[in-house]
Length: 121
Image (cartoon, rainbow, N blue to C red; front, side, top):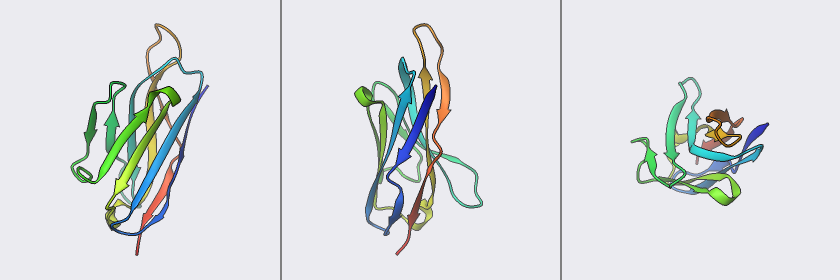
């Protein structure tokens, strides 16, 4: 079994900073792409950022230059550094990972339960 657990959410002021973490645990052989998604109240879930096992990253246009995704492969953890957050960044942030549970196994997608980030003054 594999679990993804997010942490680090909370209240942050506009222009402040916050770092989210997501740790994967369980029966893990390798982790391919890891990603952060978010869902604001009344809106559809959207992709925020992705990172490959080699460290290649991609970002939604709305967060480019403000958010940074990174990962610690040794500890199966992905981070999202949120700098200069805006009111519209308020959402539940969830991590997602494509994980293989054994040699020769394909990757399956796993989700964390999410952590709430509220940007407010």
